[in-house]
Image (cartoon, rainbow, N blue to C red; front, top):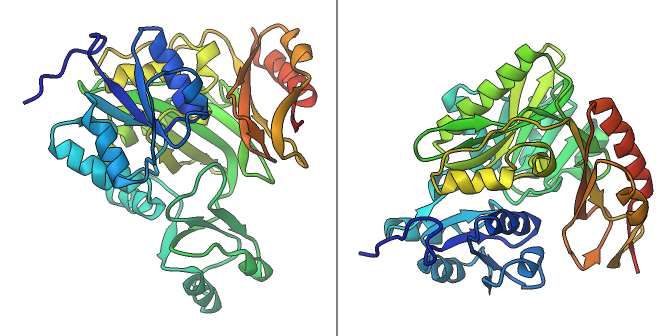
Length: 388
């Protein structure tokens, strides 16, 4: 039987499936401990390939690639849910420590299974029905079983705003997404919130302060994120407690990003979760005592969890590819933004831009949230990702 060296031992190997921006920022956090991060993704030119020499080119959706990669490791984690879990189940049987566990991933990467999980665990979520395909949805509408407006979500492969369609009327049925899906009643939303919670194998849990998200209406991507959220202390405590309830229900070690709807009646509903570092936690790098990336490492390595307290209020701006631009990336307004106090620019290093592609993020910290918001609007106006 293989003896696993202790974390931070020179021979210890921690791996991650996925080498995008999340893998890059995870590798940067691991570098503070001189902990090498082993990465599997299809191209060394991806963001993580610039910051770790331990990059294996392969497909994290392919059984053989995932299995071979995992065999060399002591602990394996992810930066994206859509990975080959059959290989992970086999690696787990052979004794590899995997966080989150493949059984949990099987639930979370299927939005229909997620919704059934919440129903079984009596976790509040929007009313829903599951359908095999878009034609079954049309038939249910014709029978009067579904009322407009409603939200359709593809059960698998949705990511960064893809796989979600809001159907407002009969004409909108032409825009139904193909394949198995979840149909939800459209919630009368007051705010969209998120709480990132961490849990280690000892059962210790810690939640970051709730954040409020403002979405780009075209791309369905977060455009601005505000921390702290403009909610009462009582509601903040409820959101944090709900996130902890969810991470315990899943029995997850690592991070869980819990996206929440706050409806007009003041009720909190779980929208969906991501069992990894998440866009709604990028601000923590600059604004909290522990970043989400260090916290994820602490959790999967079963270290004590770090403080989640804010150092200062913050706003995060997602840096998206400009409309009408596709090709080699260039950045306009970078120097002007760097001249603004409290502005922290994080570029992901993606060589090619296209409209609404996540190319980086900017965190603005200030003594007052209002001040951070004003600077964030200025950054949004100045900083553009265009093609050369």
